[in-house]
Picture 1 (cartoon, rainbow, N blue to C red):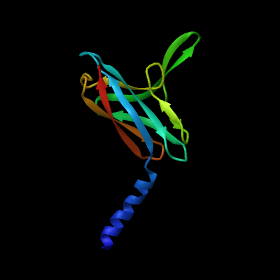
Picture 2 (cartoon, rainbow, N blue to C red; picture 1 turned 45 degrees about the vertical axis):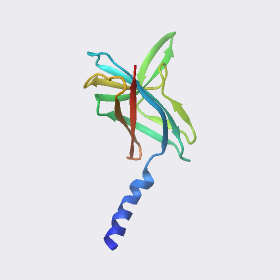
Picture 3 (cartoon, rainbow, N blue to C red; picture 1 turned 180 degrees about the horizontal axis):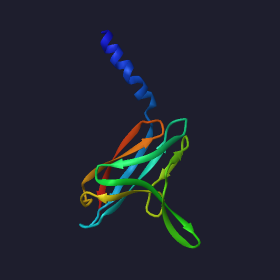
Picture 4 (cartoon, helix red, strand yellow; picture 1 turned 30 degrees about the vertical axis):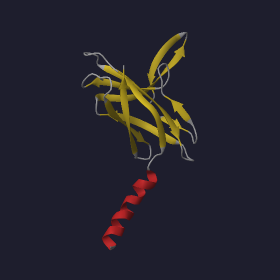
Length: 137
């Protein structure tokens, strides 16, 4: 009994530290063979009463994964990496074409329609959250 209690208590910090982002509509565009990069989208909502900070992302389908956003500068649309993204309590951020998005560089294979893949959000607290994305045409 004591060993069970110790095992459960040892997991408690991990459970308490876990980020709580509600994720909706996680999807990615299908790519054509030979395409090296892809993009993925989702809606993230912070259900916690404290800010959540995404410091980086990773995925099993690409060599590199980054949070990006499009910005307008001097009448020219530019894409830039977002090194750290803070989501305020109750805030919802929609990752969509022309705005925030997840870039997948060095795809290991094409993103095929109706297949899925995972992408992991890494938080400042050291915890992480894995999201499943459905590939659409």
